Image (tube, rainbow, N blue to C red; front, side):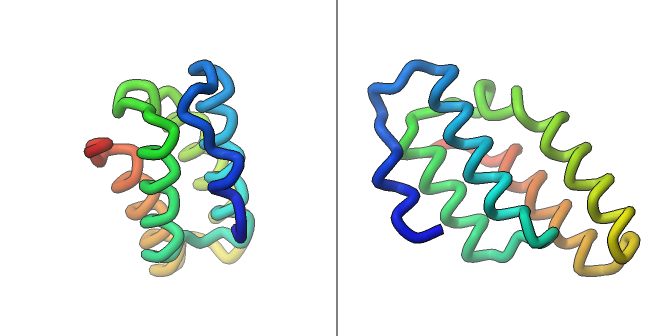
Length: 97
């Protein structure tokens, strides 16, 4: 997502920060995969927004469920789909530091 970080402002309120992160997650998952590079970008985005692990986990159930359904309806639970879900959970369970 070229230039997406220019929209990241640490002084946004919490709701806007979560919306920004959710938009980044949706963009990165649009092709039903999450690469290591995309995972690193999401982590950098979360850090730039200054969101805590607890705040980020508010999105976990919704984003994980939507992604899981999308993957199942696509090509099914292939090894690539499992890797995407694993990386997504790695993102949600990692610390912001």
